[in-house]
Amino acid sequence: MALQKTPGYPVLIIGAGRGGTALLEMFLADSLVKVVAIADTNAKAPGIRLALESGIPTYTDAIKALQACKDYPDCIVYNLSHDDSIADEALKVFGGKRVASGLEVQLFWQMVTNLKQIKGDLEKSQHQLQSIISNVMDGIITISESGEIQGFNPAAEQIFGYSQQEVTGKNLSMLMPEPDRSAHDGYIGRYLQTGQARILGIRGREVTAVRKNGDTFPMELSASEMVLGGHRYFIGIVRDITERKLAEQKIAHLAHYDYLTDLPNRALFLDILQHSIALAKRIERKTAVLFLDLDGFKKINDTQGHDAGDLLLKGVSQRLRETVRESDTVARVGGDEFILVLDNIGSDENAALVANKIISALRVPFELKGQNCRVGASIGISLFPDDSGDPEKLVEFADKAMYLAKQNGKNTCRFYRDIG
Image (cartoon, rainbow, N blue to C red; front, side):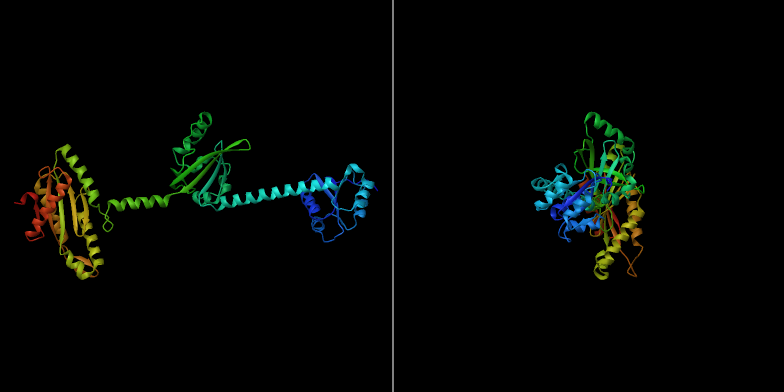
């Protein structure tokens, strides 16, 4: 019979149990090796089944397998059976240099088994790591030292709107708005040359990023560096903090504005008044503080309900804003009380004129839940610099003047100086 040639190094496996199956699995994954046959007395041995699935000739008689493979040049026989007669026959057919048996093949089988176990453990760890990266809520971006994106997990895809295929190999600067986009390569180059990091090692740094659709958004970034296989990489953990920022803004707004009317509250009003006093002092002008209390509000609130009372307060705040100048400030300090600051009021009479305009505006009935309701307003006025230069005192004096207006028939205004 003519010598047969194979595309890989020819191998014959005798014994298709655990050891033979492990060898077969390893050789099937190696293009340098060609398993030409496998033999086992048990036709249902796992190695026999695997060989049949892979199109490899199988034998239940080891001697026949040896005879069938003797014409393959340089065929190596791995004898995993415990039959010494088979080992002797293999030596007759192939010679000692091409037969591995006994302790030698057992050691080799154990090495293969250990390698297979290590490979399985590594694949399991890799799969677990990949599952974590794929399912983590934060975006994970891997970048080469030249700034090119190498990894982009599903969370990053959702945050930025790009697929991994769209960004792989592209410069990270595509995720940045100007001027950071233009400066990005310079940051990396400077770090590689000097070791001076701008964001590396900083946890939770707040930056601005840009989505695929062009929208910018606030992002939290934690960046680190790693060396793998002699190559340097940068890892970015990113989190979209848009909702958190909106919540913070809402909390900050609620701390300074009335929840019902969205007017400044007392604390913010005093800050504004302090600024107005400083400005008036610098330009030598007058500032007026008006303290307003609604007349008849309690009756509407008690008879029509609190929802009607809330609608009335919103309506009053709207009319107050429409009556005064945009440069003036209207604040709600609680219940049915409002404070106004009128900058650069000019004469005392101008302050009274504005107060009477407000009273006239509030006389017009409010439609609440299908009914017309009427309220009035009593207003007290204090002046800077005439009455005081202290914001708290000016509010206190305007409040006292407001009670004087109530005592004088309501729906009118009085100055602090009118208190005798």
